[in-house]
Image 1: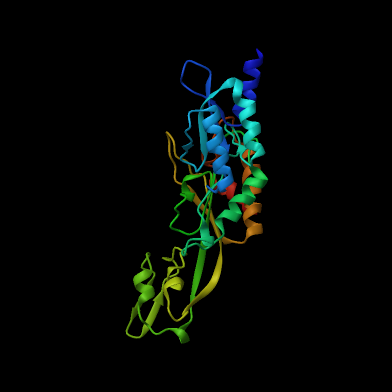
Image 2: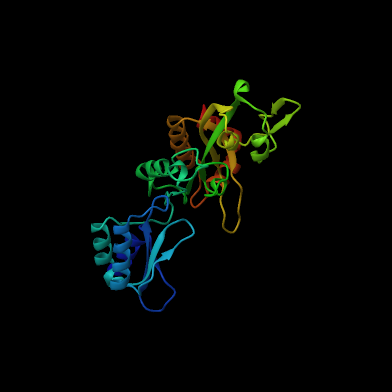
Length: 286
């Protein structure tokens, strides 16, 4: 194995991908958490692309960035310069990949959790962790699921269970109109709330002008086993409205289960299906 092959194998683990051109050109995958970049990082990317590539930066499907057309001999200098300006290298292969997230309640009126904060904590703790196969996280601020929590190996979704405060209610029907799940009916001076239909989106509380909807419970809903690609699968809801400590306990146990039970190259959902969801659930939650 020559020096070039050794270097390439090292770079590939960090998201350095060979291109289809016959010359030695590569795309460098960069580490972005929840799609957030500072203006200085953007300047660094523009400078690096102009200097080493073709003045282009590609935005990936998972909020990541790639600079393409990088000559192999420039790889180390490119990475050093980017790192010096706060832009870190990404990853690929059988590892925890970059975490995608919406802006959550920092920006979005519908956001129920600080999705950026949770994404950063997941990234800090688990990014590039070695596993039997690739593992993807998504954090979405509410059940609108803009970040497609159900299409990832482990998805985190903000949720809120409302509680009706009768003495404040004027029966204006705004909550009935706003509820996307038809879980609320207002008729003849009475309000009926069907918890089984509720999707925990909090729209009733957001729209009510009289604060007649309070918070009964709120927290993180967890989906597991989703994926896209050649053989897509919708994730399964594991639990709902857990607190942050419980969430990270679930993440830790899920990765432990995957590392213990998966075969090489297998995806998390395939492992769960092969071993059995109830056995997985007992391992993670009990």
